Length: 267
Image 1 (tube, rainbow, N blue to C red):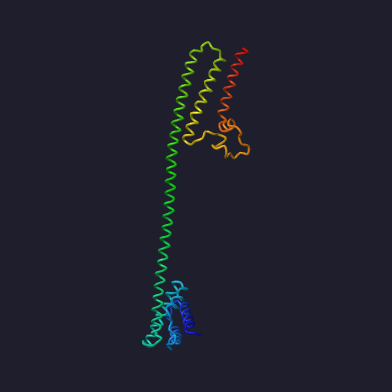
Image 2: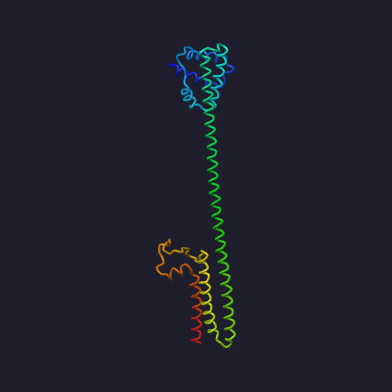
């Protein structure tokens, strides 16, 4: 076994012992072992060998190794300060201490770097979250504007529609004192059809401007992307599938008109 292998075995033994300061017998045993390695002066360890060995140890093991070598060096100095063993142990302790300090600094730099990286990642996530919140706020503001337009438009349409309808009805009814009930129903139904459809198209225009939809059964604005298996083949079918209440109101008014006409013809 060459000097390097013997040294690695001794270092491994020192690493396995937490603290040899109270074990004088073990200190003497290890001192004699180091003497066998260094006393002849033929073997001199290199800083590279020490660095390579310490690179495989954890921080606690490096601390234990440094402390144990220091105890053996103190014993060797008490025996002979100028011996090859004492000088070699002093150089070994110096190399171990320097390498332990270097590795500790590197680990500290890595720790600080990882912490900074985590903080930067966290900051980036926070910026992304804040940016998303700002986008949501912008969307809400735009939604508020569109809702305001919708409310004002609907309110204006309703006011105009009801005011016009009441005015037409009051003016018409004042001149229809002697008119049959059938004619009155026909007249009111025609006015209802005109006003309802005008109000609907007014609210439809407001809804399109504000990005809303008045559709009930079908929420698809683009009929080319319709999810139904049986797609509407005509524009009229598309319209009444989205707005069935328009169809049923107009049908009801037409039925009333036809009933009034029939009543007038047969009675």
